[in-house]
Image (cartoon, rainbow, N blue to C red):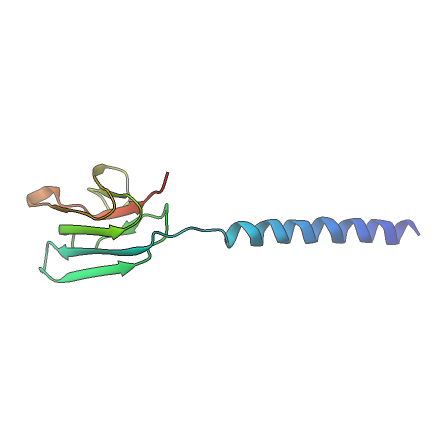
Length: 111
């Protein structure tokens, strides 16, 4: 009988752990809308729709201009690893950058 009780207890604990992990992974948030930028190296326009929150997103070629048409503030960084903050674009705000100070990454952060 004790073996069945132990097996039941292990099953409940394992099931709870799986539900906890699954619940956390499905609760990821994303900014709603589009973030666009003009590449500083080529002049081509690039964009992403509904970018994930709290994830460092490299901006290929750097951003000469950036338009945050999402519902979440976008924090721009000078480096691709999101270590050196440069600017924050509020929802529906844009910015222009030049020279050696073009942003190379962005994080969307709601809070």
